Amino acid sequence: MRRTGLVLALAVAATLSACGGSTPETSAPPPVAKPAGIPPPPDVAAPPRDATTTASGIAWIIIKPGTGTIHPTATSTVRVNYTGWQTNGEMFESTLLGGGPAEFALNRVIPGWTEGLQLMVFGEKRRFWIPGALAYDTDPDPSKPKGMLVFDIELIDIR
Image 1 (cartoon, rainbow, N blue to C red):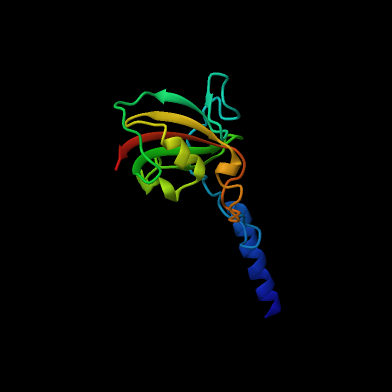
Image 2: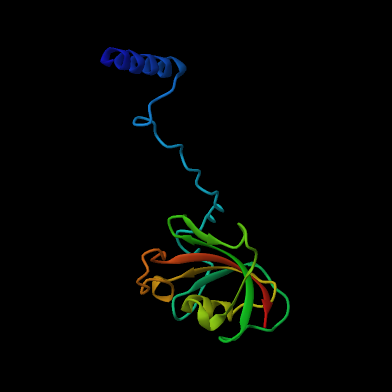
């Protein structure tokens, strides 16, 4: 009996080897595809010289001018499309990769957004460099990105 089992095991191993197969103990899981991100802007590491900086340290440039003169207030609800990167170029979040625009009250987001979006007008797109102290540096959640963050934000609607 033992000899039959050994012969059978050797036959299976030889067959798998000949077919290019492997036993479950030695097979590696298939690679998991990382979702494609949006490439970082060339100035992601630091604001360019022509960026404007607020007293709190937020730097910004206008990517696309908006229309009108109405700015959101700290309690406005806004609708935006945005992408966020860390200064090493790693994208951590974007409405452009599904789900569409986000809507939220400006008094319910990071302080850098509350301040920065009040500078914008309808239809405008800006790039912000937000210091960590005005983003997630004090948030104990380890999944939140730390340090300066870069956001491209397009203001779609103000309510």
